Amino acid sequence: MELGHLAAFVGVALIVIVTPGQDTALTIRNTISGGRRSGVLTALGVISGQLAWALAASAGLAAVLIASREVFTALRLAGAAYLVVLGAQALFAAIRGRPAGHRLPQRRGAYRQGVLSNLGNPKMAVFFTSLLPQFTTDASFVALLALGLLFCTLTLGWLTAYAAAVARAGDLLRRPRIRRALEGLTGAVLVALGLRLAAEHR
Image (cartoon, rainbow, N blue to C red; front, side):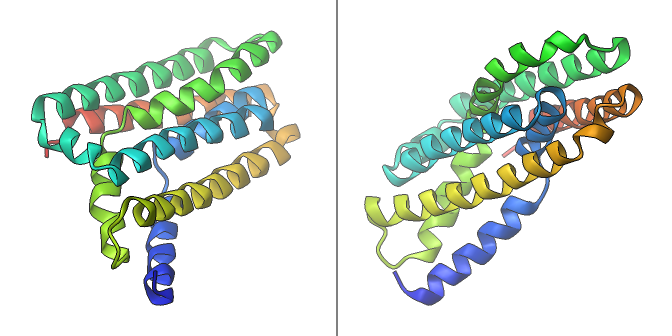
């Protein structure tokens, strides 16, 4: 792989990664609810989903998914519904307030939420399938997977930094009014992202 192609890929990847989306919103929401550990577990779940998409794209399986309109649409709607459910749960929790004991179940489910959120976003299949081949002259499985792994590593670093920053402001965010306001905001964002995903057409 040429150094110029690698540098260009890193630049494009960073732009995509730092642009706020459903993975960022979910990481922030779970960090607010369960602390840094929940945020990091969410990030690891997101990366697990990305790894699955990277493997599928490198092996050509993602292209098969994209070619099937029915499967692609079903996955998109399932992912959208999951985001709406998570967002609605956050909104309801913000309205009624949460007991202190909510943290532990949130931590146990944080990784799973990250995985399902990312796997339920078929745009990742389109993204990896269309992006990776543009930055390598060797479109082999190994070359494409290496770029996918690099993207996942950069994403993990970014989301982990987000979780650390939100957790560092823990004393402020633990104030009931602020916590509920932020949880309500992230819940609304998740619902909006889910509705937007459901309304999109290829």
